[in-house]
Length: 457
Image (cartoon, rainbow, N blue to C red; front, side, top):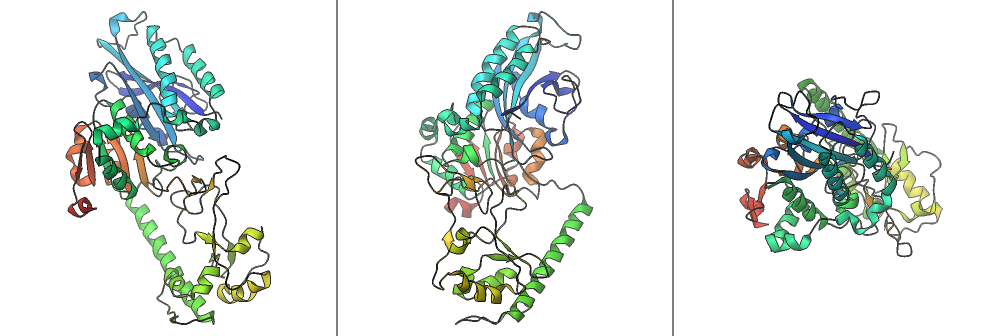
């Protein structure tokens, strides 16, 4: 697949509200271009592409994020250009057009966060599409799809085009020293809500704040729309039961390992059956814990070498290990299995030529002749450079929603959402202050922090 996944037209129907009127290729395989059915993961697409209160403006632009569809792993980045035209100006007026104005949005769904570049191309096509005054002429939209996929590639992220339309200078002039406050709030992964109208001012400022984090826009948003919605009480009960089983297993494993571990050091305390694996790791001798690079995976104490994940999901990206021994860099495979992790490592590590005084080596990509080398991070799974950028902020249920539709309001109080950086134009979001840690009034450059303790930071 190319960079652009779909070109979508969303219109406002006087009875049905916002709905998809055209998609190329079809949003669901096997259906027609004019099908109005949506994938379950993208059920909010019409409300994001045609923003709330759009009728108050002649035109507007929206940046938004969609969760990945089943089988995909990364966020889908959406750019929508909205316009309205008087119904009497149309050359071909359909029977369902009963209002004085016609409101439509042309939307691009992309695999890459090229917001400004997509906006520049889309604005021209949207203008030409409306100038036809006949919305049945869709050939120009198909040409847009082909043109974008032929001209855009993953190498576009390496150029300054990623920041097209974003102005840190204007942001600093408007917020002044409060920019640092915004930066800290996101760094602390708090619930931050941006508020202003129209949407183009909202999303522009929000994405500009994120651009202050090195590499964040290019590679740090791949998990920013992934969360696990709670569907039923029975599902929650099953999840709690599963969690309790894991805790019980962890306690037993710690006890078993502690009983078979004969290696002790100064200040090392004896383990009991109630200690978890984390407690065991903290009480291990320093020399042993630094050398250890294996994780107990099963009740049989099967030991596996820590591997870099190809892509870590928010649910599976937790890890207690961020360093590897020097021997890991020298050996590609570990042969054999050990029944006792602690004692076997103490016997086998010296035999591999590693001295007892070796220090753990932090795994980082090596710079390569002026070119940025990116590898998946051990913890986050994000594409990181040699300095560990971008920071793994928008992972594990911390969402980034440049524009948030009113239909997504439930996400603010969802227990599976750890936090968010979101933008809204509806006053209902601003009024419910208990759902956020800070509200950013962009018109007045005012940052309202509700928690007095957080205000001190």
